[in-house]
Image 1 (tube, rainbow, N blue to C red):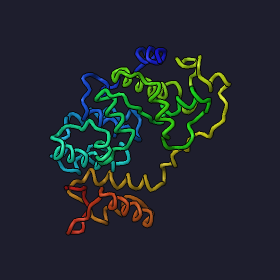
Image 2: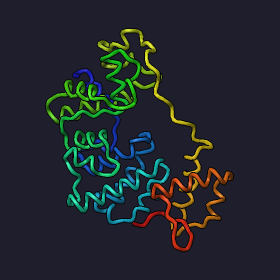
Image 3: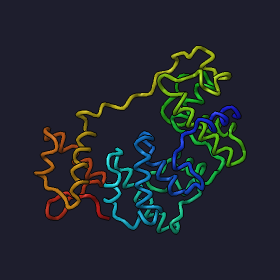
Amino acid sequence: MKELNRWFVTNRRDLPWRHSPRDPWAVLVSEVMLQQTPVVRVQPAWEAWLARWPDATSLANDQPGEAVIMWDRLGYPRRALRLHSAAVRIRDEFGGRVPDDYDTLLSLPGIGDYTASAILAFAYRRTIPVLDTNVRRVLARSRHGLAYPRGSAVTRTERQELAEILPTSGEQAATTSEAFMELGALICTSQNPVCTQCPLATNCHWYNSGQPANQQPPNRQARFAGSDREVRGRIMQLIRSTPAGVTQAELDLTWPDPAQLSRAQASLVADGLLVETADKRYTLPTS
């Protein structure tokens, strides 16, 4: 992995959550934000979030609706509620300190295998496999000659394979994991990879086999325009700008299709993002 790490030193993006010393709360927030949102949109949101809530306790002491407002248009605002719920657990059960144990991290709202592993690797500098979509693609191509990973879920074989090639030193293993992720994000991309600039090209089975189209590309996300996601976004935009709450009549003006509006509204209520008050208004959650 020496070639990969040398490439990373020269080509790594200067992302603020990578700055030393690594603060576990800052890393946790970045990983939750990055789950389904591009880096270019996450960075300013992350900086604003940390300026307001520099630790888990400060977020836990605020209302969950404020977290949704700050989330703004990052998408999938349930992540903001889960992050608030995780902050409450961290404050109440762990003295405001982000846990450094895998199973404990998994017990927090919104934290899955990837995020728990990323926190341990990048914040606590532990030797642990970190497998996101980019890393899985790099491994599939370089080691197995496959255009894309098999299936959408991380497998035990992939985790074992990565564990075997990571350095034993926690610091070096974390750097290598970041390098794999960066390579997948910048060079070994899903579409139009720049193989001639890849530090692994010499030994990459896929590149040396002529880049065969031997796997189906991952499913693209369904279109946004006209979807229930767009309706949910319209409703959330109105609610974020009107913290005191809105009436049903005001909600009805956000979308012309009553059936689709009702479906999207019901889903927001079910997710806890929209709360009906006793006086029949709709607001962000307050507790």
